[in-house]
Image (tube, helix red, strand yellow):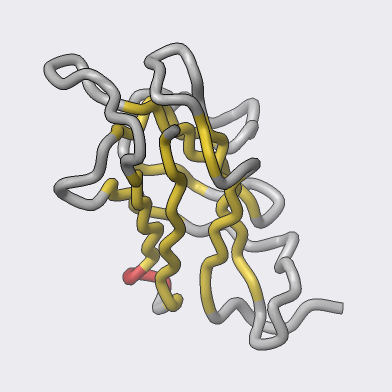
Length: 124
């Protein structure tokens, strides 16, 4: 049984993606307790930020909640069953992807008083 929510955990589907605008990295955001266990009933507003200077962008975010009408092209999501998803894309509309780059994402839920989490994905 999970305890009270204390933080967020970011987990990429893989550590390296191609330096190509058509490749994507899927980053799972989870609300966790003090022991790192998923808190499945947590409903938390999460802010997503790609660190300035990163070689990529936030392509989309969402939770899978069928009642959430928020745009997928937002820098925030609300967890559903304790989770939401951020999708990262190398490069940007004005900057081509870079080989050997790094995309760093930070998820925060300061209003809920949770510890933030950061994770990186490399481009190759």
